[in-house]
Amino acid sequence: MKKGLFILALFSSLLTIILFLPFSLHLTDGALNTIDPLFYAWNLSHNADSFMGGIPAMLNTNIFYPLTNTIAYSDTLWAQSLLTNPIIWLTHNPLLAQNIAILISFPLSAIFFYLLAHYLTGNTLAAAIGGIFFAFSYPRLAQIGHLPMITSQWLSLYILSLLKFLNVGHRRNFILACLWYVLALTSSLYFGVLLVPATAVVLVADFLRNHELNLYKSRLAIILPLIIPFVILVTIAVFPYIRLKIEYPDIRRNLDDVTHLRASPVDYVSVLPTSLVASKILPKNTSEHALFPTLTVLSLALIGILRSKRKERFFIYTFLGIAFVSFILSLGNEQAFAMGNFSTGSLTLPYTWLYNLSPLFQTIRVPARFSIFVILSLSALAAFGIDHLLRKKKKALVYGAVILFFIEIWQVQTPFITIPPVPRVYQWLMQQPEPMILAEMPVSLFYHGTKMENQLEKNYTKLHRTDTYALETYRIYFSSFHKKRMINGYSGFLPDSYNKLAETMESFPSSYTIDVLQKIGVTHAVVHLWQYTDADRSDIKKALETMPLLTLTYSDDNDVVYTINKK
Image (tube, rainbow, N blue to C red; front, side, top):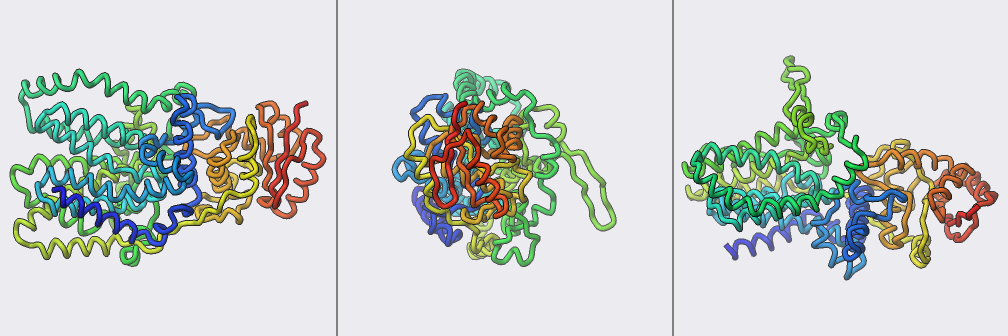
């Protein structure tokens, strides 16, 4: 088994590097796009900086001044920081740390799934191939620019430990299941929620298998002393979100968001535009909507279902159940199913009931992400199919299936953008003493700019004030170096107070906007004149020069910094 793990680790690592060329050669200065990757690089940098600073330092980031608990506006990435903190401390390069965390998730996902599949089948080769299927599946490839969701390696270990506990009842297995759950939860809040239905399926399958009262009594005796420590750990992990809910009682994802970000049946036959062969045959989609499980995995899973041994039936039914439940939940709150002239019209799906009943599901914005458990389950079933073929001495067929899988998922020219060195204005800010609180201009409401999709590959020097998302994520990323507090921000949650401030700042540098900044404690305005149109730039410069409360403090390449004087 150790030899198999070593070979799998080496093979999956080399495969990752080759698959993502040339991006894998630009880990120090490459970002997969200019929105989320820059934001998550900043997030990791904040975690590294605040690691020894106590709870307030961890929760209160430098963005969205004067708001607090701003780490809770998105995933905390505390689990990822276990790996990335040492990298950032050594290199001072959060982009490198993030890119390593992204790429290493592929071999880790393969290895951890291998452990699960080996427990299920007892077959080293079947487990290794199953690990490749899961690690390089479309639901994972499509999330490569989204650090929280690409870090899905913990899911296999959680399911493995849960199954082991239900089968043998050792305390260690339950403790490990709790540990893997907490690591998944602190990788992404989504995983904490997605694991609930998967766990429910496993428990129901186990209940249908066993009806012995004494068995449940013995399990309860093991679990009870560990429940309180587990609850404490989970409470610590979700404390920022609990505090956020207290501060904003009405916060929840509405069903309109769910409707736009659910999966559709077509998504399960859709591939990425960068797919070498499959994109010429199948529908193309991006991010949350490229979920094709591949014909290879589907075929092998079907063999596993139909040809499994009697003693494997519990596992077969369990993973079938997880796949089915996760598929239905990925479709979101409603769907219209059509074939030819027949259409069901819009049907309300179980997700709606769960949303109305459970606050957990009100935190989910993208039901399509349940697809990670669809592919995990299908990969497990495929491992059973491979095991059957190997027992029938059909190794050539297995290797042929692996080659077909690579043809189906192979990617070319994964897009990325080169991030420039820290611009001079931010280098100057790095040298300035605290306290210093910034407002970077221009700033606008996000939806007042162009579509986010049109900003994903924006070069820093080509930014315009209408690139509302990219403007802020670049600024946040560069704040990883100068560390100054700022009113600017980007995240999955935007408080009304920020939106009102951003809307007000659209008329900067009016006297009213300067007055607002002064009242909330902003000390400096950083104005990127080159991000305005030529016509606006002239008016902005004139207004800045004649504003009595502003003093020019720094000027270079159309980046100017003004001190906001006290009245």
